[in-house]
Image (cartoon, rainbow, N blue to C red; front, top):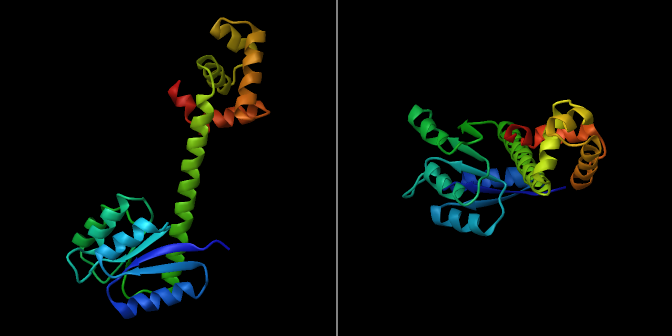
Length: 206
């Protein structure tokens, strides 16, 4: 089972320990507690966190929102705010950091657990999408300009003969391009090529 690492920013010791014990009891999470902005920054720089949980009202020179802003300049991770404040002004400030959730105290343990699970799932899906985009970009860079033209035209549903006429080349030239494209991209069927073209946003470029 993969263990997720969470940074919990909270200056009230009992609350911090209660939530730390609650989450680590399931052995799915490692929870590090930061009571001050300096400690939060130190921990965040030297550990790979998948989630930040932060109280907003901290008895120090910065509140939770300000600390989160600084941390997200280092690395973008999902954020869950815990607060007793219902004022619109706090919510508006919190929105600037694009948090995953804003939980009002008191909250149920299960509510926190579910929110954490959803935040981490959303984060994983986002990272997976970004990795796929990077991989697709690398694949596209291996194609020649002509191969890109053939691939995009192929995605419109045109046959090899129609593509050849549109690009003023022979049918056999198009077939050769298609063969090279499949080899470079690692695909075997036209359906796979078409799906890749749209998912990689190559179609919009042309």
